[in-house]
Length: 381
Ligand SMILES: [Mg+2]
Image (cartoon, rainbow, N blue to C red):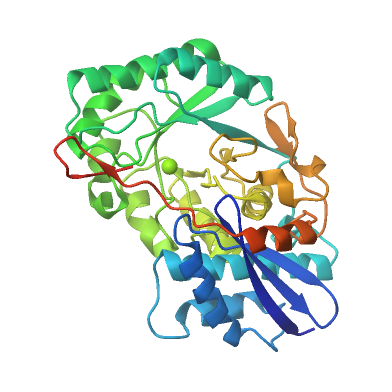
């Protein structure tokens, strides 16, 4: 079997899909989305395609080595996302070739379903409560929220009080048997993150995410040592080597993104590394169906897996929805707050190719917002 054609599709709302065709007729799909940078990643995929065309798609590990190291300069989200999309597509091809779901090729299932969570926004506690009620209605048992808008790095009393009130509103709706995680998005300094953590302690958040920006990962140990709330990070870390320091610093939850951290090949190794630190995985995935399927395939074969993020039906997916590009939507339905084990070959999804080609003609130019503080200085989103 040889790879004969590689295509990319820039599809709304903000995703980049990769399609690999082989001379046997087997086609593999992957997702190389890097939110706000997908056009740049598309160019990277096009260039990396030179290394794959004419090659045997089943030599996945060897391709990963060449793709990530082959041009001397390495690392970073653009290259790691491009490799991730290609890697997912290679695993999809392998699964279809052997007529097995990817998790079967990774050692077989260790669980039958994966708990998933959804994201909620809301500036006022009442809105938070309404949005959580909506997520409970579609069957979820866990949510994540920022619990804040734009924040001063050194938060004021009213800002910090607002965070506590929103999380308290969430806890009230959820009760003791469901979970709320809080994502700081790196908006605070370390000192303020520590202060907020102590204020949130009695509300028992599932975890606190990105308490400091990833470039300040060397500080995260000071937070893990000062709070009993499990600390999570990793959506902006792109390799085992970048995860090692935060694992050593005592995080509880590792959140690699299957479309940013080198794909299935790298994230299963991050999972194994995390296991040696007694850390569980909760991969980042506010992305499309292929990224979600790749996460789930790793999750079904990974013992230390906590929960899966997903954005089915979420308000910020404007112009298209996770399930729009999937022919059979039933594999991704929620059952008691979980997604059941995917049983189809490869990634386990049938992509609606006509819809993808049509969407690519529309394209997108999604960008992350640029926020400013009242004094005009840059603010973390
Ligand atoms: Mg996050």
